[in-house]
Length: 320
Image 1: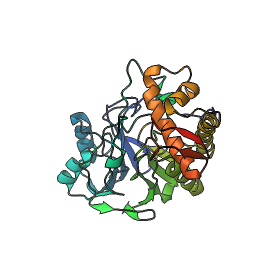
Image 2: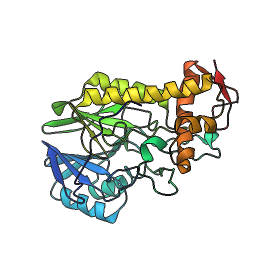
Image 3: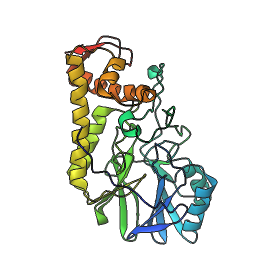
Image 4: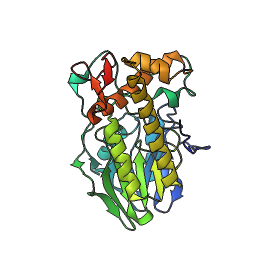
């Protein structure tokens, strides 16, 4: 697989509002995990009048840190990239405290037709194998209570202030409602979980969609941002080569899945054994969800045929 030039965050400085760029502060929650890296980075944009991006998890310590960082300032908007529980829960408290509206693409959508024996929201085993110890947790929890006061689409101004503007960029893939926020004054993109410097992004059906994810990557690449500010980890400053490596990595995995099908490997569990040789078997279920995401794309692209009523982990596949 192509190597991705990941960037690390050596000192998360929990609970402290750190000035990371002009008009940009970051407060990192102490919620490290295999999904969140060192923790959720909440961004405060502006000086006296500010917007908050991804308020983060409902942890008392993080709430207190945000309270301290926002003291004496006016919050004008609360922006949420998507509704995983490490991103949006504190939005309700912040809205109640400040009166500022919440802004996002929309709530998380649950497709009941997809409920099966395999829990959605599972991580890509390859990227998590080095971090996992024992039986891996394979589910990101959802904040289904979140409903934005204002829904935004690509190009809509989500918030603005003296010296800064944030416009919405809808980037489905990780989730169908995932949205990044573009700051044109610095050619900076707050990329949520769409693109992270420390890891590839989890794409798992039903709400995660690999085809959408590829399209969203191309959308960001065409914007030519100077810097990416993900919710987890360090900024990405060498954006073009980083995105090229991201796309190459996904395309190589897709080619491996297609090659397995063309070699007569019909079932996802058998593909996982072939493609993830050497990975802890406790992570095979998670790997199956990643393989399934590629298969759904390949079926939609017309390269693979699903022999069941819909693509699934137990569905046989064959070349088109």
